[in-house]
Length: 505
Image 1 (tube, rainbow, N blue to C red):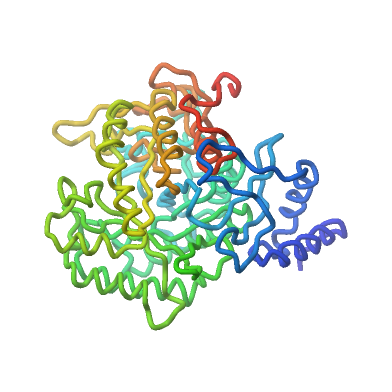
Image 2 (cartoon, rainbow, N blue to C red; image 1 turned 90 degrees about the horizontal axis):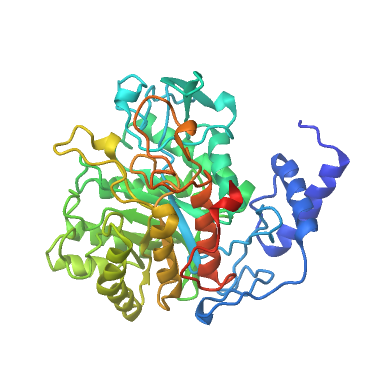
């Protein structure tokens, strides 16, 4: 049995009483006692009289009060870690007033776990050497805060001659560090991607589930939110994936007890609290899942299953032009019925605009009408926010090859323009942040190499100073945290970034 001193026992029982009274038992484990002690110290240091946030749009104001398990307005949340000298960040478990990031968690390396996939998954092509010539990623994650034992050397080298290392999401400490960053910078939580391609292979499914377990533990330890997001867009998939998805969801509910987790995202509909589930790939022209009758059957089952434990609040990851059935959407009229049967619609907007001016036009012509239409239908609308885009290394053998930094981040101005418009819109209350750890397509917001000194000497890398602006490596974590504050009303709406990067260099 693990040994704990009396002080930690006291902290454990203090939190057991406090958290049980709030109806959230997800943190009550002896394994978390040391973490709880740290939380208790932070709680004692920063607690003070509660304050209601101010914002121009009072429809988005959240009054932070003790939670009530039966309340639709303030379901239970847990205390979490926070930025230094800042109040403890409380995350209310619901979709509204939250910015939620996509979390890929798909990176691996040979020998990373008992369920060894024996590949540098997503870092390099399958079967290739881990060298700069084979890179599939655009940004280099900042490695200095991870445990050395969780990293593996590549054939690339840093400027000082050290071998460059990479991580695997199969390592619990890696995922925990990511969630610690979310808590530190005030990011509410994530949708964790569960890719259906290859999930019929036992080893693949077990590896993906091991990462999901890491996410569950990390969310419990940090008080962040998480939910599952299926991806049915793989090129090898067809309509048969819909049956496989149903069986996999049953497995996650029954065997992994996923929806019983205290930090699994829930949303109230018609007075009933439901676990949230997202399915990405519904209605895209480029996706081979196209049988609307089978899709309608799956949607109906997920919303109205005879066994209540399988029922969900269903978010559809849809094409950007779902409403008018053009461009990236399939054009058959039957798709309108599919889209409008969803509980929430999340259009994929990455790459749909390339400049701030382009975003303003798109917001006026597409997003605003989308949001109004969803409000009329009683469907929650969740637009996408992204910091920039680049996938040179992933597509460098294409003809023509894309350029590096194809959608510049502009030091954060590109992302902040989106954050402001979304926060100011009266009928947008939830935003998808694309993405937390997506270094393949250059949309990652977690800590990455800020300049050439923080990336391998060989290879072509997108660094945070690519636009000629010196930024700290955690700049986009900070921006996402500030956007979250603006969304939930703890800071006023502002068109200008409320932080100066020089203060963090």
